[in-house]
Image (cartoon, rainbow, N blue to C red; front, side):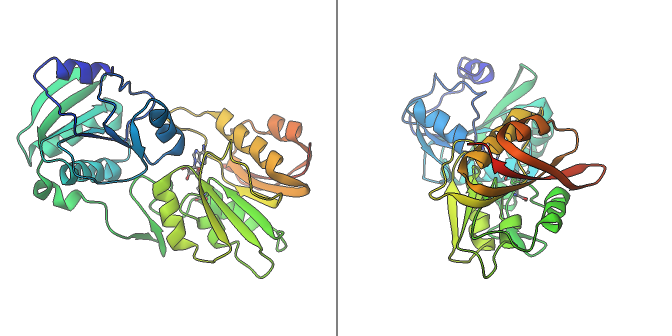
Length: 320
Ligand SMILES: C[S@@+](CC[C@H](N)C(=O)[O-])C[C@H]1O[C@@H](n2cnc3c(N)ncnc32)[C@H](O)[C@@H]1O
């Protein structure tokens, strides 16, 4: 059981069986919670982790419940939106658990100005505290119905929620005019790249994204009927047809530290899903070590563009 939650449950916090758990990650051990608890987690691999443990899991949801626990994400706007969401669902107690590095101290300060707080208990470089649910007290923390940035729908906590990512902009500039008919955008986010891939020669465009919230934004940003939306882990995804082109700005961390294995998994997936004469176009932070994986999975790799922060690769002839 997560150590702070365990301590809180042994220090007067009592939770009912009617429980919603918002945004836990595999770092959180929920083994002591009732399996009837609803786990709300938009990130597909994390969602699947809790579903496999027997929890009812959903990418989004605000079904009424008695009590709710919020596991604090790093993005402040998302943290606030989750506190509001917890208050909207729960009629009893709302628990907040978070690491210092994710801003739990400043959130506690802000919450204390609005409602009386119980706990707080400090342990393992973080805090846990709880309060009586009160949606009105946090009404201004609700996620906007339609958050717009530079003309696109985005949402709190999704990648580049506040505007176009410069690496993606560089990749877009580097793409050829002729891109093939069957294309996948791996880690499509809210759809910036895909929105620019719609042209007359397109047959199908697969947007593959693990974050359900981002994919929901992408549906609003890419309305062409040839677009297909896949809520999936791109590293294990199988395209329904061999692809002519894969385009991607792969993620390089799921938590705080960089994890090049993730981008390497994206490259392997691109090679696996491309037709023999298919092409990969990808952008990456200059310091990330992707060259060896590209050389292992493609017979031809070119460094086609870049600046002091990013590099753009074109890889072709995937090795079968
Ligand atoms: C660097 S962002 C690029 C987003 C978008 N393509 C753009 O250009 O703005 C990487 C995206 O990959 C998504 N992602 C992370 N891990 C993933 C996985 N295992 N499978 C699919 N998508 C993933 C993230 O949620 C994020 O939206």
